[in-house]
Image (cartoon, rainbow, N blue to C red):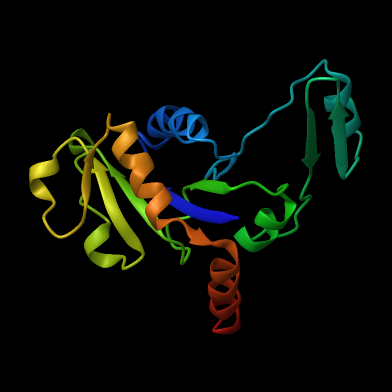
Length: 179
């Protein structure tokens, strides 16, 4: 497995880019999974569903399965947020994992930047950023730069810069030991 991150400020277009990027990579014959970090409370369940009743009744994990898919919900119930290393271990093997968010983690990342956000670029201060996808390409000179709508170019970059999972795991372990 190889991994790469897409990082950027909220509203930059990370999810939109991923929606264009995944079909491009998949049509090239790769299997892909994603991990998305949320900075806020989120819920994939809602009142009235049996799984919601199970969860709110106190179940630590609720697995819902059908002939089409399964979903495992795990309630932290006050436990710390699982780290990226743990989350990567939960995934089934694929060729590529695209990670949205997790800006501080030591993985190779493509920065997604939108000028209308009024935010500075992240890349000058983050050595793990290998390229930038932006709507203001003329501002970026020192890294490979792609237009936000250039799914083919960004896919080429992703496949060229995605790092082996083992390298990321070593980096994450080193970062944990340094704390």
